[in-house]
Image 1 (tube, helix red, strand yellow):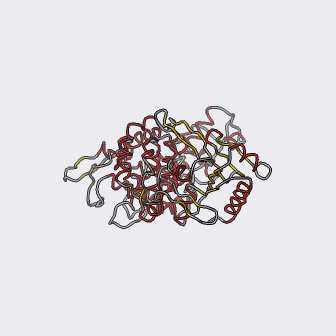
Image 2 (cartoon, one colour; image 1 turned 90 degrees about the vertical axis):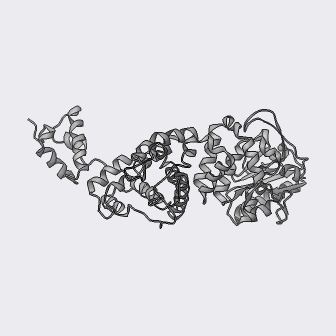
Image 3 (tube, rainbow, N blue to C red; image 1 turned 135 degrees about the vertical axis):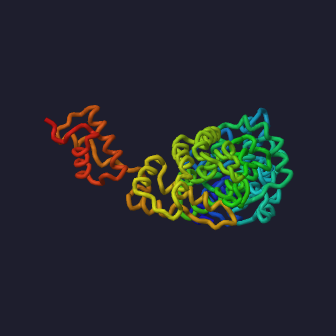
Length: 464
């Protein structure tokens, strides 16, 4: 348990109890993670016996108070602790937002816990360590089960996607009755705000140790139908010599698990982890449309990398992914097969690596290397490996592993030698940069000699 934040929360709860609160319970993800031995970033306290205004008045002299949800009875303390009141919810409309919510400090802990989505999130804990578990959440944690707390689960369709990312994070499986509830909610997906859909997919990408479990849960609940580009991977065959693991969906699930391992190994931050996981998820989107038997009767998918780019763009748009992430994922999808056009034992030329770095931007060769490693490692029982180690070595020698090459020759170099600003300088710089990428020079002196020596520019460094 995080000692400093827990101690701070205990002081806050003590002030509330001294002022008349009948109970202050630690609830939600904090308790779940504590019981699973996982460090939790957030602390949530549910307060009974006080009104929203009373909580603010009690804490305001001692803490920084941010009112983040008056209608829901939520106060944030010192930007770290969420204080909430138990609340009653009534379904009045469709979708995730179709609720009337009323804070009610007179509810019992059991009544309050019944509104939570899964039993693993419906466990309360007092500050002395006493567990309140009216719906068997501890048992489900031990068994690795996602179970709806009550039939009210079916009133909020976002809970299906929450189940997806919980399955991916913890490796849990959803029990049969909860799967049935999810299937009954299938037609409510259209009412979910795109930003909330993205929020759950982002958690799938950035917090999961078993991303494949989330993908399988989408299939089990029928919600994969809402992501047809993904669902079409199922039953798309592959050459068993290269892919003994099975169809493209099974391969993609393994690739995503491999990507999660690589992200953990390389300690990627959430944004870079998300790029890798979505590149892994989308990398073979082009296979269903391109898979055919060749003249030897083998399954092949020619040009699937390029064909997958618009499909990946459409999928990421549908789930609400930000443009910056999409801009990095798409070139990783487009280029994930380029190394296979070279003999596996050959060393790529510097020109090839520079050109690859240019095509990958704004992604990088380092990100591409992780994507290729994930792809190659998602074919059990074949061993995990990185097929582009030599490419990375060349990229590091050229200092282009993390960004595209930068032009050596600049306009100021030409202007200082008598050229006037204008379109002609732009043409010269473009031609010089192409020559630089081809390896014809790697210093400014070499660039100037190249400009002076090549008739293709149609200029001289000594204009009259």
